[in-house]
Image 1 (tube, rainbow, N blue to C red):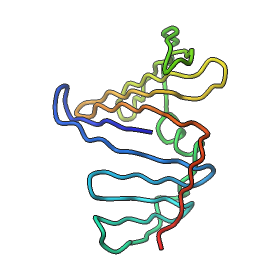
Image 2: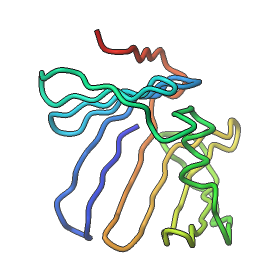
Image 3: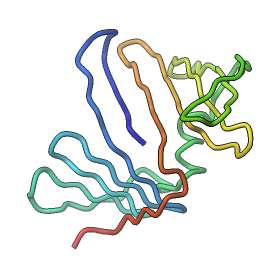
Length: 145
């Protein structure tokens, strides 16, 4: 997944690359820092410095269930906006609100497979776009050595 995050429309954008491996692994890089989640353990480092490990917030990381539950678990007012094509895949566009944040989401879900292809979130000072690619591709996330 590629994330583009900005604090304002037209403002500077921070690009982050995520790699997910079910059921409990993720790795992401932003600028010169890298974070890896392996179940209940979080590893972090900046540049080529030493890895630091710590437990993430309970219950630990899970993909995709825990990840999506964290983002969408308190959704309200879901709406079907219509159909669009993302990377050649027919999708349905769904919009909803997270009143606890507050944030507004749109997700593009594959009609045939139910996989999320794109996600946009809008909140005050938080403009985030996610593009998902290489779904079910050969990805391996391993703990640091």
